[in-house]
Image (cartoon, rainbow, N blue to C red; front, side):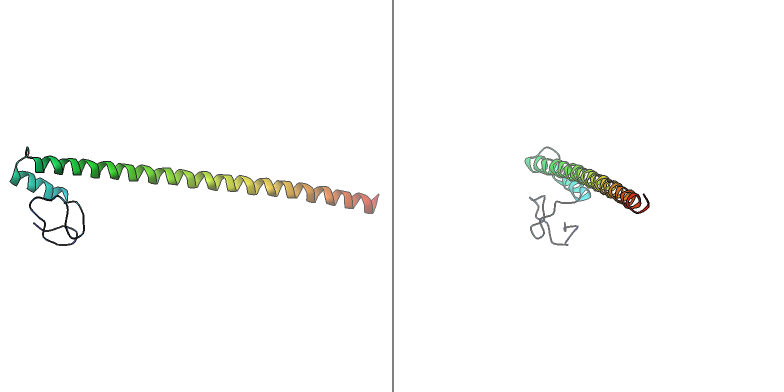
Length: 106
């Protein structure tokens, strides 16, 4: 059996490729289970590795969602800060113009 990712030959007692380190694909795992049987220690180790692979994928997708939320919150804070600065600066601009108008015409 060959590695799906790099084409290197896979050992009969390993669930990972000795060349690239990738875990066998799901199809390869199913074929190995059919060849070796389901209740031997090798198959139990393959099942454990496959469960860890699934957990890692779920963790990575959860982390990606969290990063997106943090980015949105940061953008919202920046927008609010810019709006506050614009309002503050326009207020002083209006007060300065009224004072200038008052001094010139009154």
